[in-house]
Each structure stands twice: as C-alpha cells, then as structure tokens.
Image (cartoon, rainbow, N blue to C red; front, side):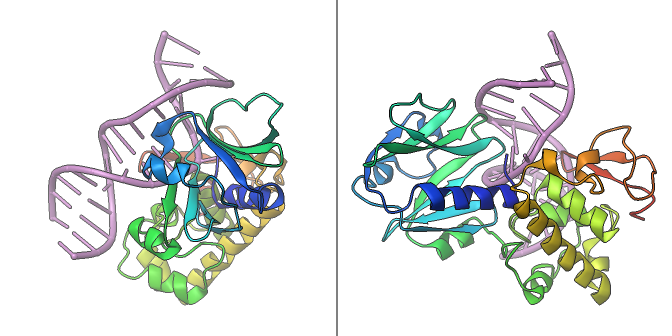
Length: 259
DNA sequence: AGCGATGTTCGCCG
DNA sequence: TCGGCGAACATCGC
C-alpha cells in the first residue's frame, strides 16, 4: 500500500494503539519478512514500544535501546486487534501485549520487511536513504540533487535522493508542478524558481495526502490521482491523460499542462 | 487466464 | 566510485 502519507498514518496508528504496553509474545508466522536475525525479535518480549518516528516509507519504533524497523513494501499494513478476535489475514508477525490486544504486521506480497537496528542513522546510511521528503529543507533537497542527471519522475521515486515518494505521489507532484516526467532533473535543479516550485509541491501534495489519511478514493477530483487511468481527462484543461512507462512502472501525465 | 500492482535490490555498464 | 537503468522478486485481485 504505502507511500509516505500512508506510512505516516501507520505511524500515528502505532502511537494511538501500541505504545507503553508490555510485549508478552512475538508470533512469527512467516520468517521471510524478517530482515534481521529471528533471535532479535524474540528478545523483544518484556519490552515496550516507547515512541515512533517515520523516515520516508520506514517506521522506527524505539524499544530502548534497539529500534524495530517496519517497512511495508507494496502490500503491507498494520492491524490492532483483540486476542479473542480472529487473527487478521496475511499476518506475518504479531506483537502480543499484556492488555489483551495485539498488533499484527500484515503483508500480502512479501515485499515488506521488519528489521531490528541499534541506530536509526546507521540504518538510514545502510539503506542509502535520502532526506525525508516531508521534513527536508530546501537546502537538503538541493544538495540531494547534486550530480543527478536522471529524469524528474525517476529522481522523485529514487529513495536515495528523497525518501518517501513513490509512483502515485510522484505523478501528482509533477502534475501540480506542471513538469513533464521526462524532464531532466539537472535542468530543473539549475533553475532556482522551478526547483523551488517543485519543492513546495512535494510538501503540499504530501501534506494533502496525510490530511486525507492517504485514502486515494477520497481525493479531490481536481487532482491528477483520481484520473490515473486511461481515457481520463485532465481536471485542469480537459486534455486526455497519457500513460507512459518508466523504469518498469506506469505513470500518467497531462501532455498539455506538463510540457 | 493473464496482467498489473502505492517497492526495493542487485548486477551490469559507462 | 558513482549514477543510471533494467530485471528480478512474490502473490493475488481484477
């Protein structure tokens, strides 16, 4: 499921449901989602989720001294449920708390992973993650684009450049910025005004996504997102939305608005 | 029945 | 060494 807005909602979900309760058991239904040694997960018994932070599409849960890292791939999610209720489908790992509730990490397609790490910074370095797209400063963004020459769409989706933006939101950001997805990022980064515009649209689009709980179906009709399919019309100018393929993904744009 | 999907990683090339 | 790019990975719903 998740790009940055959805992951931010997951973070809030953890904060609202799972903090400060003693873990009495860690059920591992499928070891394939473990990105760190299984023993580290078993060691979590007796500990508590202290707080959480999000960087890009990753959530770090402080367990003092270590951190549980959650990543959701394309089909991961979280579900807090009562022990008496049925286990959510596709539950891969379940954290059972002493209050009678559990937090399930679910994943349908096995692209997500859970890790244990000693330090957030070393984890970010290891995964080569760039600055968080929602929290970064303009200077961070500018620095991140140094020496980059790929097209705008690929740059936005590259987690080493900016962490958190994926296929859907990159389409929307480029649409709002009126930038053609194939435009070279170095051309953009050498144009201060255009770069500033792109930066602002990244923030606005992500902020909107978070405010709408990342529920794409609810998104305003004057955005591109509801029209990301063939035979749709641009909500701004009425031109037929075009589809294109780039690094193995499918993007949409308005050929008139995004020259 | 086959295609496509909100993601990351790896290996090759220049 | 670094950046760009394409393929691979796994599974299921439409």
